[in-house]
Amino acid sequence: MSKKIGITYDLKSDWPRGADDPVDINAEFDKPETLELIINALESGGHTVKKIGNVQKLVAQLDDIDVD
Image (tube, rainbow, N blue to C red):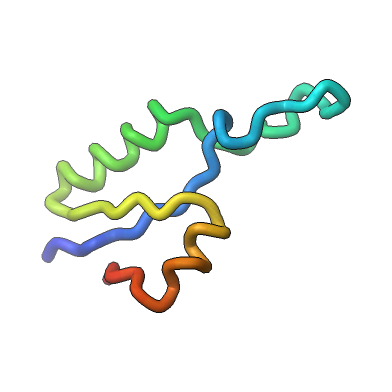
């Protein structure tokens, strides 16, 4: 049974490190390539994936997110 999956993420490129930030300030964030690998794996399992983005984008879409 295929599902429509919403995926949330923070990309390293969305949170550039400032001059005074520690070097690992965005260590937990993903690279676009990682996100695409995850999406491809889900889609290869027959699912549809909707990229949602970060938490602010998730909250903005809560009323009309259209995922399972």
